[in-house]
Length: 419
Image 1 (cartoon, one colour):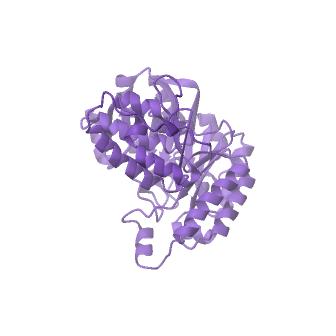
Image 2 (tube, rainbow, N blue to C red):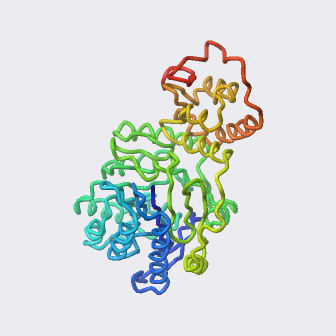
Image 3 (cartoon, rainbow, N blue to C red):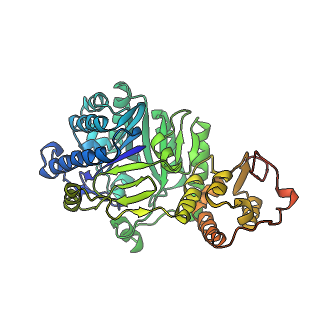
C-alpha cells in the first residue's frame, strides 16, 4: 500500500498551478498559522479513522505532496510519520518523500531536521534555473536558492535527491533547456522529473498566453526539447523509465511506480484521492468540508467501484507511461481477450512509424511514441471500448504468421527489433 499526504499550503500560488492550495503569504510562519494547526489536527484524525479500517497494512512508501509540504515544520512531519507507523506497518526500507521548494529550505538546519524526522527522499521543485522564467512561472525562489538547497541536502547526508524541472516554457529556446539540464546534471541528483508545461484552464499563465502577452515555443522546438533532453540525460546515466522521469540505477521513484503498476493507495488531506480494494474516492478540496467529513467518518461515502472497463483503460494508460510498457498477459487476464488481435491495424501502423516496440510479452512506446502518447492512448481507448462490447470469439482467425510468435504460455507477442 502507498500513502499520499496532501499538504495544501504555499507561500504564494504559482501562475501555472491548478492544484488545490492555500497561499499563506510571505513571512507567515506555518507553525503558528491557525489554518495549518487545524489542518494537522484533522490529518491526525483522518489517520486514526483509516487506521481503524486498514490498520496493520504494510506501507511501502509515503509521499508528502502539495502545495509545499516543506512549509510544515520537521517536528510536525515527524509526528505524522510516528502516528502513521502506529496504525500501519511501515516497510523496513519504506520510501519517505517530502516535496520541497528551494526557498523553504534556506535554513542551515532544515534538511537535517527533516531527515531526523524520518524523511529519506527529497523532491526539490526547481522548475527552472533562469531568473526570468522563474518570475514568469510565479515561483517564489531564485536560481541560487536551488543550488544552495541541493548542496545542503548532500551535505546533510540525504542519499536520495530528486529535482523537478519544466520545459516548453514561454520564451524558452532549445538551447536554454539543454543548458538547464547540463547545469542540473552537475548538481548530481539521483532523480530528475522533467515535465512539459501544460496550460491549465483558468490559470494566470493560460490567460497571458491566450491574450498574447506570452508565447509558448513552437511545437517543433518542444519536440526537440523532449527528444534531445531525454537523450542527453541518458548519456549522463539517467534511465528514462517513464515519460517524464529519469533516474540513476536503483533510484526510480517507488511511490510513483506503485501508481503506474496499479498498487492500492490511501490519500490523506484535502482533495487527496484514494484507491483501495477496488474502490476510489476523493476528499473534499475545501478544508472545512474535509474536516467535517473526517469527523463524521464519511470520507468514502461517495466512493465509486472500479468497473472492469475502467480497470482495463487505466491498465493501458498507466503501463504505457513506463519504459517497461504494458504486459500483454495482464490485458488478457482482465478481459479474456488478445490485445494484439483487438488492435491489430493500429499496432501495425504504430510499429511502421517507429512509435512502439513489442518484446518478451510487453508492448512499450518508443521515445518518439512517448512524445505523442496522448494521441496514441486516445486511439487505444476508443478501440478498446469498442472491442469490449464485442463477444469473445471462440475460434478467431490468427494474426498473420509474420506478426506472431509464442512468448510463454498463453501469450502471443509480436517480435520486432528493439529500439
